[in-house]
Figure 1 (tube, rainbow, N blue to C red):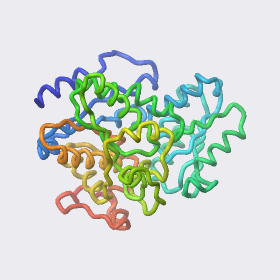
Figure 2: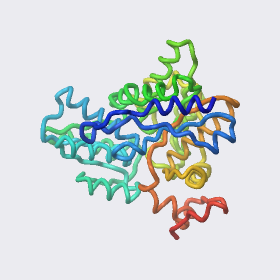
Figure 3: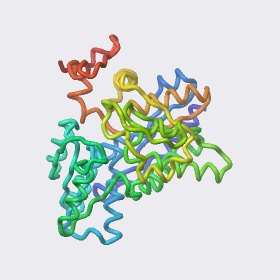
Length: 357
C-alpha cells in the first residue's frame, strides 16, 4: 500500500522543462512521506513541501493570487504600489512577485517578528515598516495601518490577505488539486494551522468537493497554536472568546474568523490545539529523523497530522502543509537562551542541534 502511494506521488511531479519567470515556479511542490512518524502510527503521513516554492513558503501562492486579482480588477496599474500587513511570509512572497512584475512593495508588520524576515524583506527591495503588535480591534493594528497608507497613495492597492478571498482561490485552484492528484484521491484527512485562513479553506473545499463527487469522505481539520481562538470557536459551536496568551509560532493563530476562513469553517471535521513544547520538539525531530529543516508552524502542522493519524487509526493517509524552512527563525529556534526565555526545552538526545547560546 505504501509503495502505491509513492508511485502516485511521483506522478504528481511536473515534467515541464522550464517555467515563465518567478511566478511560473510557484506551486507543484512534492508531497514528502514522513517515514518515522508514518511507521509509528501505522498510517501514511505526508507533508506538502511548500518550502520548495521559489520564495520559500506556502505564502507565495496567496501573494501571486492577490496581485493577480488586483490586476484583473484593474485596481493595480504598471508601476503601482502593493501594500500589505503581514507577519512575514506573505510579505516575502509579495516582495518577490512585485519585483518580477515591476511594482513597489510596502509591508507593515508586527515588530515581534524575527529579524531574519525583516532583513530578507528589505534585501528584496520592500519598504518594511515594523509597528507595535496590537489587537486587530485597535486602529493601530498593522493591517489597518497598511490599509490607510494604501488609500493615501495614487496607484496603490492594499491586498488584504486576511479577508481577500483571492487567497482562498489560490489554494482551491492549485494546492487542493495538487494534493488530490498526488495521492490519487486516496487521502483520508487534511489538517493544518491557519492565519489568514486561505490555505485551509481553499484546500479543504477542493478536497471536500472532489471526495463528494466520488462518494468518498476526506476530513479537514484545523490545528491551532496557543493564544488563538479558533479551536475554542469550533469546539464550542461558534462562540468567539477573547484572545489570551500567545505562541512562539509566527503567522498562524487568530483572534477572529477571517473572511477567507469563513468560507469553509462550517464544513471542518474538527480542530485541536498544539502546545509550543510539542512544536519545538518536532522541529528538532524532523531535522534529526527526516533531515528536514523546518519552522515552528510546519512542525505544529506535523504534530497535528501525527495526532490525527493516531486518532483515526492505522491504514489512513493524512496530509499537512510544510509551510517554510527554519532559516527565517534560526536565531530563535536554535538558541538555548531564546528557548529558555519562553520556558521551552529540547529533549536531551536532540540538544546537539542547538548551536546558539
